[in-house]
Length: 116
Image (tube, rainbow, N blue to C red; front, side):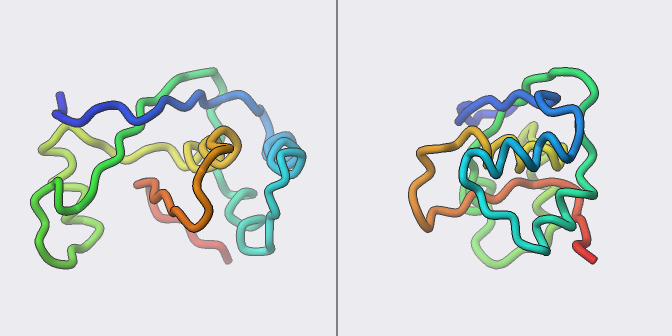
């Protein structure tokens, strides 16, 4: 178990196809440029509805005092009970986090994806 509080929960599997997810995002006013479109096309989607817990955690809260590599983040995060998330979480968050402050970025730790 980890010591961090749940920031929010996201439900995956709400949109069975990439096309439906794209339509939902566009309906909400999200602009999908060419790079985002390529990533969206490669994003695996959940086949069943499932809820995931999201935690807002900084590198400093994990004990980092300097820059760190992704693999280091994963290792230290695992020691704190944290794990990578499915890539669909980023899309679900974009759709549901409608009151996200402008210029306030949220990084989601997932397996890396290439846009090409």
